[in-house]
Amino acid sequence: MSTRARRTRRATLAVWALLGLLIPMVMGAPSTAAAASYACTSSTPVSARPTLRYGDTGSCVTVLQKLLLAKGYNIGATYATGYFGSGTDNAVRRYQASYRSLPINGVVATSTWSSMVLNNYARYPVASGPNTTSRVVLSFDDCPNSLSQFRAAVVGAKNLGVALVLFPTGNCLATGRFDVAYARANGHYVFNHTISHPDLTTLSYHGAYTQLGSPGVVTNYGRPPYGAYNTITVRNAYARRVMRIWTWNVDTNDWRGKTQSQVVWYVVTYARANNTVLMHMGWNGFNASAISQMKSGLAKRGLYVCRNLGATTQYPVFRC
View 1 (cartoon, helix red, strand yellow):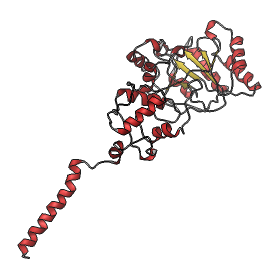
View 2 (view 1 turned 120 degrees about the horizontal axis):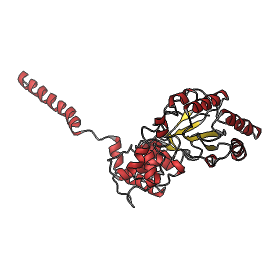
View 3 (view 1 turned 45 degrees about the vertical axis):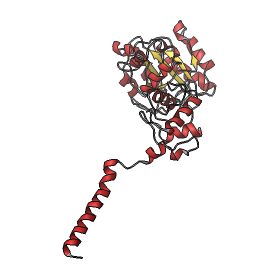
View 4 (view 1 turned 180 degrees about the vertical axis):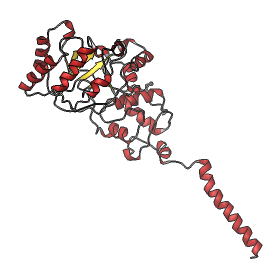
């Protein structure tokens, strides 16, 4: 072969080699997730299932939708469509909010698949919230009567070694009677209680979603006013805000005008291990004296209140 022919052959091979590199780059090499999305069945191992999100299509989306429907989650249709639209996205977020350790992001990765298929994740209990201990949580809603009362109560609780869980409204914050940073610096948890305290189940999705934002507390847990949340609209709003709902186990009804001794008696008598107790900052349980009596009264029954473990953050990992 002549020198010229050898050069021509080498040049041709180089061109073909370059094309071999470029074609996959231009066309896009099929990913494992994309391939799996077209081959999914209900028996596909969790480890082989692709990560799914809004906009995806295929048989794996169909499998996901059938799982959601079987578990009672409305996907916006009565049957599996194979398209990951807004209805499926909302259903996934609501599902994720129902389990302690799942991220609320609408993305169906291995953890969410595993929870759905293997049932190996702990449910999130709305009444006792993120408290995984046997300790009793003393929680207070709405708004204190004054900033001085608020400060005395949170410092008094801190000095007693007690962590309170506080749910002020946005309107309360606007009046200057509650200081979020001050409460957190003193070891208490501050979560969302809407802006103006409406019954969220009477609002549109946009209305409920707006109520869960600023100037209310922006955080990772929220308490719906009146404990009213059992509609898809409200659950969607909380999940979109990446907030888990936290209600209560024991309602003291302190707002009915009960005296301090009546409120204390009710808490000491009816609270159980792992319970969350509902009280209100504007009534007679929100002071150091009452909190001290609740703590000592519960201790006599072998129950202990949530410990104050130091400053908390905007998006805390709840600890008792």
